[in-house]
Structures are given as C-alpha cells and as structure tokens.
Length: 566
Image (cartoon, rainbow, N blue to C red):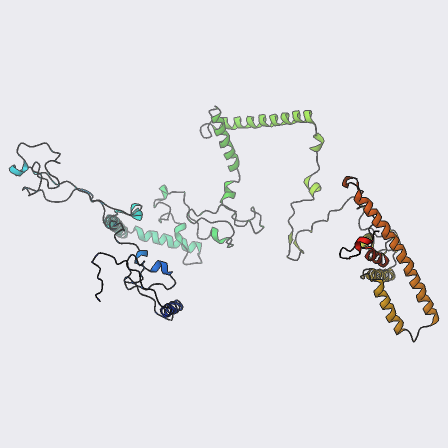
C-alpha cells in the first residue's frame, strides 16, 4: 500500500495514535525518574533542557498545530521578531558643524540649485539661481547637518550621562594640572629668592628660639595651629585677610562622636559636623556640668531665645501695619515689645477677673501644690532589677487619714488580716471576735481542729445519695459481719433506726405530693400571673426526699403510667 503524502506548507491534521498501556506506564516511569534526577532531562529543539516539573500542557505542542514537533519551551521565551531594537549606548546626536573641506565640484545626485548632496532641487530652501550649481559649478553650498534618529529604551531616556564625552573631563584635568605646575614653579622661585636674601634662615632661627623658651615636650606637635604664617585649611595664607569662620576642630579637643559611643545617643551628621542633641542626655549628667551639651544647647541659651522672640514680634507687627525692623531700629522695636507685653498681661488679668466675677470658682485656683496632691516630686531615684533603691531616697508610702497598723490586746496582726467563710479575724491567733485578746498558737490549734471537723462534715454531705435498697444491702452486710459480736441491745437499736427511717420516708412522700399539687396549680395559671421561683429556699435534698422523688416521678415508658392518677 502506498503511504499518503501531504503537500508542503499544509499541516497534517491526523490525530496521533493512542498509546498502549505499557507505553503509557513507561512514559510515566521516565517522568518520575526525571523529576527525581535519576534520568537526564528532556531536550527541546534548540538543545536546551526542559524542567521535568513543568506541566505537560505548557511544554507540549498541540497535535493540530504540528504533531511531529517534540516538546519545547520556545513559545515561552521572548520572540525575536516581536522584540524592539534600541540604539546602542555609544550613539548620540552630532554636535557642531561637520569639519570637512568645502566642496568645489558638483557631485552626482546633489541638488541642481545649490549643490548640497543632502537634499534635492524640489526640497531646496535657497533662492532659485539663474544658473544652477549643476551647470555653473561655482558657489556650491555646504551639506546640512543631518541628525540620526535614536530609539532609546526606558533607561536610556533617563540616563543623566547619556551623550557625555569623557574627553571634556580630560581637558579640565589637564587645565588644572597646568595651574598646579605653575604654582609649584612660583613657589620654588620664591624659596630660591628668600634663600639668596637670607630671610628664610632668620625665620628658622627665631622659631627655634621660641621653641626652646616654651619647652615643648612632644616633638610631633602640630605648629600649624599657632603660627599665622602657615596656610591652614579653612583660612587664607595672609594673616591680615584671614577668614575667621571655619568648621574645623582643634586636635586637642575630643570629637563630638567620641563623647558617647552608644549608638542610640545623639545623632552626628558627618557632612555638616553637627550634633544638635546632647550626647549625655541618657547618662543622667547635668547639661551645665558637662563640657559639651550639643549645638542646640548653645543655640537656645543666653539671649538667643529673647532675640528670636523679638524677631518674631517684629514680623507679626509688620504684618499688622507697624513698620519696625530689628536691625534698622532696634531701640524702637524693644520699647514697642515691652509695651506690648505689659498690655497683654493687663488684658489677661482683666479677662480672668471678669470670668471669675461671672462664674465664680476662685477658691479652686488656690489649690495646694502638686507635691501634696499627687505625692510627686522631682527627686531622682534609681532602682535595681530586684526593686532595691540604688540612688536617691525611697518613695514614701501614701497614708490615709485613719489610724494604720495599730495593734491592740497583745495581737501581732491587725483586724482583717485573716478571712474565712465570709468573716474577718486576726491572723496571729485565727480569732473571729473583734477586740478579743490574742491566744497565740493555742488559738490556732483549736481553729485548725474546728476547720478539719467542718471539712469532714462537708465531705460526708457531699457524698452521692443512696436508695433504700442500697442502704438495706449495706446494713445486711454489716449484720453478717457483726453476727458473732452482736447482742440483743444492738438488735433493738437497729429496729429503732428502721422505724425512724420509715417515718422520715412517709413525711417526704407527703411533702412530695404537696409539691406536685402546687406545681400543677401553677402550671394552670397564666404565665404573667405565676409567682417567682427564685426567692424560694435552696438547700441540698436529703436521702428520704430523693427517694420520695424517685417513687413519685412520672415515667412515660411505663405502660401503667396513665392509671396512676385515677
């Protein structure tokens, strides 16, 4: 049989053959081995490995597109035909006119009117000549400066150094190097002239004499700080024209950033060499005792604050129409400021008096000081982690107007130091009687015995209630055990106990019948007319009452339950 051939350019839409169960199992095993790393990964048509964890619907090619293609990830990568091309990093617009020789001969394809090769005759902007450059061959115009069209990407449009020419910087460096060389030659000439005249030797001898008189101990001491003839950084060479404002410290002074090495202390700005806050603020030192308390301490001390307040008053007065100036007329401004303060105080006092006259409450203004009201002072007290006082005095305990810690009648503790079952007493003797005499350890022993008895009674009462049958069985067991040691007197006492229990059970049955009748009457009443049951006495039921309740209880599963009420 001849095989069916598909023409070129036409995709064969024949569905792939179904895999057998064995082939499917082998394929799955191979995928598992690839995921575990035991088998080499599958390779696409470009020779790149395919991640075995990528799902099949991403890597496989649909059968209706091209069933002959093997799995690939080419469609997941950027397509070359869709990528936009951008200009390289070295390209930029041309600057200046082209430095070329002037053309003296007409070139083929150039403008017939002016002779420039960058445009044609119909695009020429020159005045039409009587005889064009093509025929005359003279006065050929230079070519236009044509700029390239740059296609910049996102970063290229925002690149601040785009189009920068490093040759410009080299020219600046060469210029500064020439100036430096000229300075050095001038300095060398000046030194040679001073050596020739002998002036430099005299200066060296005088400086040596001064050093011997002062008796400097250190040889490497910097003399630039004390001699005006030397060029200091931040100052001019000539002492007559020295710049006094400089932001340099003397080498003997401690640097600001070395005063407190705690990283959470005041911030030091290295650019301006400023530390505005106090570096010793967290150490507990007084700002007036330390040598440096920050730049703000100097800025906000002395007459600086008053000067700033005066300047602020001048600005506010100028806005309201008063033409005053701090530098132009300081005396007038000071007098005006003082009169303003006096008038402002008078106005506040008058306003306060009118408010008190209208509403009253002057007695509340004469309050005691804050220390007496809140027991707060400015005294510094430092505590350890265990609560012990390390520095300063311990805070006094606030006391009330009543007498405290008053011990009477030989007691070691106050009344109210002991509590039991809703009653207060003395902790030293467990006495519950106020103003009683202390009995000491003897009273404690008596109280402990009483408490133990009460606990035993409560435990007996808290036992689960037993039925009459259980009690009778228990009594029979007791009788069997005590048959050998029993007597006639004990038999008569057991009969009396049984008679008493029967009487108690009869009373409980009658009380249960009355309760059931009362419940039936209440259930027949309207809900709004029923009495409250929360005010009834609540106590623990006895064994006889529980037995009566079980005997009178209505059981729905009893077939004779309907005949009980008849």
